Image (cartoon, rainbow, N blue to C red; front, top):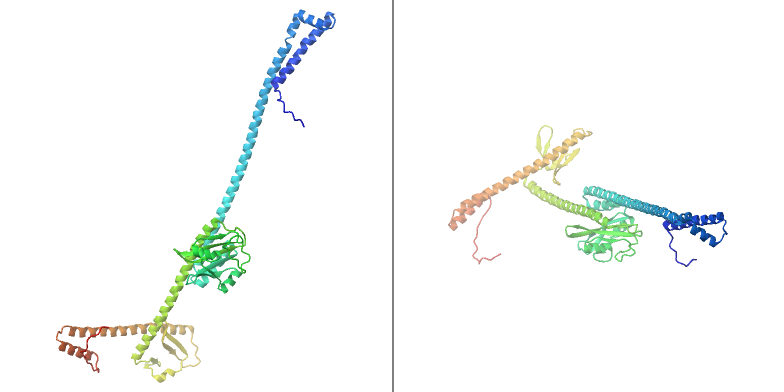
Length: 450
């Protein structure tokens, strides 16, 4: 290996000048040799010097190295200019190629970024459409026991998650209880009344305590993750709080079989979904509470109505009426056992207030659907009319009572004498309540406060 440093190369101007001068030097040399030969002089240095000094023509020929060297130098200079120009062109060409490669690489990178951005936008659009579909699906379900399993199932179907569970806080707000799940393992946990202490171990325990979403991209590396034998395929998990306003009432737990399945964008989208789920659950809860209150009110109303009807019927001597085809006859106690082939109850707000009985002279007669519908419609309208009549009777009784009280008050209110006042009060009350012994006795004991 040559260890000497590289010698600088001669450029074309220098090479051409040297070669031109060397080539021009051959002219005087050849001319001098020929003159010596033609002059007959001996061929030696003295003869060569003598010819050079005595022949003027050779003086002109002696300038050949200078002239040809200058011409060659000019040609070399031009060659150097061309070489420099070619080198510059080559550099420009290389720069253009590099720029072209950079542009192509930049275009490829931008195209890849645009494709990735488009894919992200399409994925986000599909997720938003899935959220809208989920919202529409769960907004029509009002029963809480139907709503919660449907939420877990449809979220799993739309997003492809392995396990989706809904935890609700118990009344004491000590535990988050798994109430619904879509996976088989999750359903077993629901059957076993699986619960997690709020603020205790597990991601759901953290979320229900802190009120913030929590992601475990690799459950094996997250200390907050609590492994369950019923969910062996979980590799990543996210939990988000269910809340209305500032009140946390549960958590949405989502698990995937892929590590790193969730991103910050997923938190944003699932947070939107969790808000809709929270509203749907609260609406179902309010609806359930309203239904329970309505049922209790109906039961109370039916019980009150039954008591009112019993009181009303006990004050009325009529047990019912019987139509024999010619006239209407008041029923007697013995008529209660009269045979009939069609019986329609008189129902008023859940209270059985009577019975409409139909019998035919032909014991084999079959009642048609139209006849049965007419009987039911008559029974329904009769129940309403009876209730209106009862209310009218009670209203009249209350009016008569208020009128009697008003008259007594008017008569005794204008009296100032104690004896006259007491006598008037007894007299008026006796006229109002006939066949009644009435007395007013004033107490001589010291009044006591109650």
